[in-house]
Length: 254
Image (cartoon, rainbow, N blue to C red; front, side, top):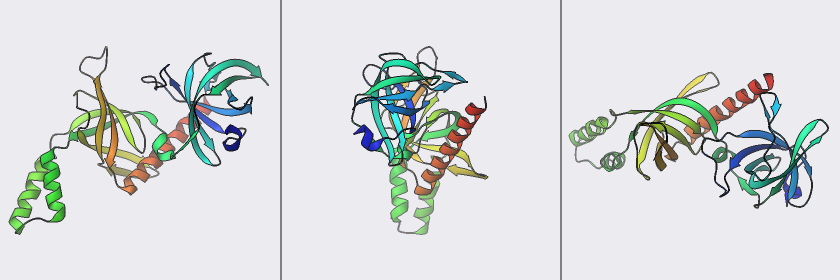
């Protein structure tokens, strides 16, 4: 299947995994490319270049691979078998140990960054008021205005957070508060897309929230967007890939 999907020179994003196949905490994404096909499930990939030096992959190490192909994005996991030099380039032979799965680009790529945000919890009471306002369930204008007034009270208690990475599907961030899995949040995100400053307030849900060891009073949260307009999502994706191109360009210039 590899030869049916992949081509020589395809760009690859590498993400370190632990022995259980899960992403390592705070791990970075490395850029590589496909060099050769060795066997039906073994390929050669170029060693990532970090600050002008080749990063030799550890034998036995596990990685998630994202292939940028002419047919779209494909993801699979691999284990490193060996390293060798080829045409003055360090190359790793890796065995692809899972089937390649086609993925949506917008949902996969995560931009690692430090970025300020503000967020707040969305309560059940707020959701009920928003639903009532949406269906216009009022007997008169006074009731409608009272509903709007009550809703505005929820828009005061914002909490500061620091984004660690972000994608078109969600983000990971630090804050000083622990939250529960399933909690809903409204998040203020301001990004620069081209020459425009874009402000958005998507609604998200907590996937995981836990204390960071050795950092007193700091908690990490992983959230998934559950209510974001198509326009805001597209602007967010444009921002992510503009930043990604800028970072890659900076790495090449070093």
